[in-house]
Image 1 (tube, rainbow, N blue to C red):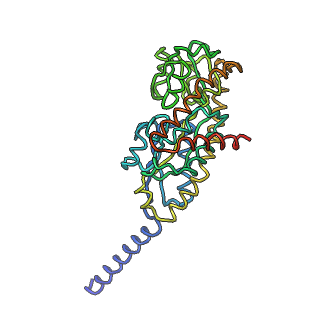
Image 2 (tube, rainbow, N blue to C red; image 1 turned 90 degrees about the vertical axis):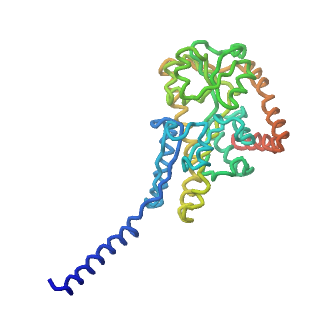
Length: 342
């Protein structure tokens, strides 16, 4: 073959390589990969909502973004999620106020026993609060969306808690502000991660645990719980604030940020609907497995509510000492909750 033909062939090959590489670069660019950490178990309905959020982001960005969810605390433990995101260990994580008491002092108002009826109440109040106050305690991250479970319920493994007096001395697994609720009601709070609760209830390490009805099914507590007691005094929630590393967020192309925010804007309400569904399902699941549901009498509810009322006053005083608008937050929350519940 002549040198001229060889040179021509070489140029043709190089052109084809460049064309293929260019097609790959423009038509099949490597997606932006984001990691999402959650403490919830992989098969749990709340985790599936996180996965669903990621899939929706992937769909709306036409595959330009890929979200991988690491469930069960495999990337970050529940109480390390927020700090892990700020350090870039995970791009996205779920900061749960109930596992990080004192870390987000102003926002802890949401976890107080304000009288929530369901997850829609707590989720809508949480988002209204975040929009109104834009708490500086989240300045290190970008908040994507937020949701919260429905009112807490007292689940006991052996003893029926049918009256206010039955709470006295009861060893109750709890986290965050729910520990203050247990103490105010005369119980003995036992700090413990939710994942350890099943064994603690089955072995008698604790007598009871506070959690929404969802736990009877989602965490299989119905296998070790005999009674579930409802009262407005247990009506706290746990706020789930899904946050993203700020540098990672700022580095995203503007159109990608817009799409992610559009997906996130409606996701809190979707999660609220999910909580509502799984809490009803959890209650039904518990009853089916022999769990007896008990409701305090009007008199016992009044005693219990009177016992927890000082927690709201204490919150206001603590915020005042810290130079934070606690009184304004409590007034906003109580007024806003009334509007939501109309």
